[in-house]
Amino acid sequence: MGCPAFPDSFPWMTDEDFWRRQISIFNEQDKLLQESPLQLTLVF
Image 1 (cartoon, helix red, strand yellow):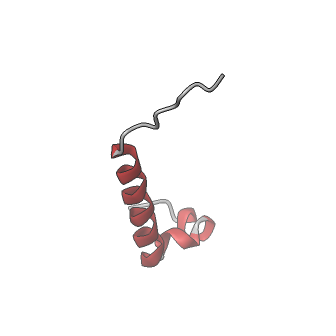
Image 2: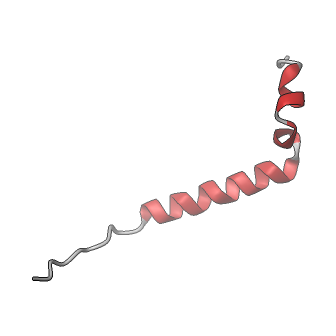
């Protein structure tokens, strides 16, 4: 049983679409983290 004030304080978190978007964002971040790091070259 959760805190009864939670849904009133954060109503968007009970929206199913909110969580779909969050998962999509997390998946995109994970994909970017799996890429090779940038290779920097010094220019003098």
